[in-house]
Image: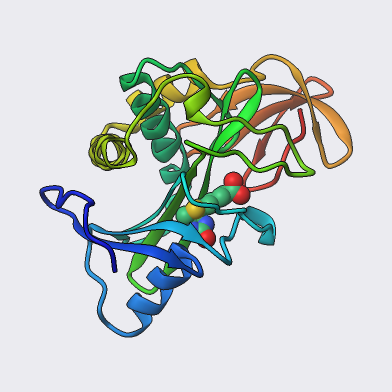
Length: 228
Ligand code: BTN
């Protein structure tokens, strides 16, 4: 375990140089009975970083890799939006504007800078966040970018801001989250590909479902991927 990361009030922070995956570590911690609400596991690098849809999250030194453990009474699809808004708010606090590609990919200039992996385990939810800061991998699925292209930020400062914003937005009224999410979302009122068909992206509803318009009818989408 490495030192140097701040002990943010309210969070128990476990910081490592290189581990397989902060997300996997969080799962193991929960399974061993050693987890508590507001634990953050940070690594400087990961050799088996995980992304959504079983993808690999390439995790060289120089970026932020963190998994937060929070109490979770039930699964809540609205959490994904609060996390996305927290990341956008965090980047904005360093003067950088970003956009959200549903549900919570964070883009700058159309290129992915951050990703979120939300997994439930027992009475907890694990919110894994990767933000490209000093390096950005080349991946097949999309273009990528890094924060260093826009502003120089210390990883510790980025983590502190992110942890505070997560607290703020996870507690916030969902109407406020929704408003912020809609303001930052990319592709609204545009055609996107959903299950092989072109549909119009309308927004998200009060329950956190994505609303699209297909042949003039509104359709709710939970958890599928759309392509823009
Ligand atoms: C995505 O596919 O967009 C989600 C990427 C999530 C990556 C983060 S990095 C910290 C945490 N540990 C992991 O192995 N994955 C998440």
